[in-house]
Image 1: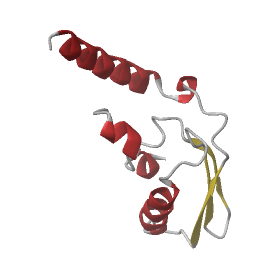
Image 2 (image 1 turned 60 degrees about the vertical axis):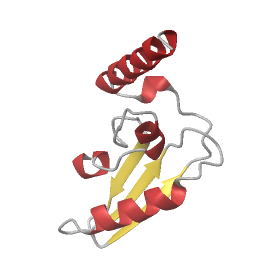
Image 3 (image 1 turned 90 degrees about the horizontal axis):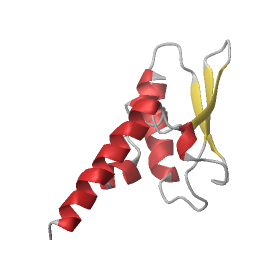
Image 4 (image 1 turned 30 degrees about the vertical axis):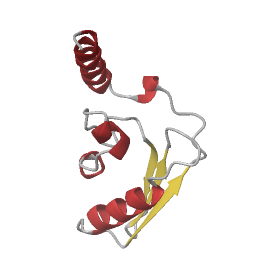
Length: 109
């Protein structure tokens, strides 16, 4: 899970709040077989997410490099069930603070 959280969600990076996949609540389920096959069930934030290829590449490289891993499969969902409640409390707080700073800057323009 720590390695998955090193992968930052590009949309959160773009808004100035780089959050990992775990922090964002994007890891729905993680299955690891006795043979080292890793299945990652990814919860997308929106249907037709354009970042699926990025997530697949990053998870294959990072998780595939871990000792004992024989294969990695990323299984994205349809992007209809993610909500902010899936985020960690720390991630929600960080995001709220970033939005508050951005709103304060707009007021000063």
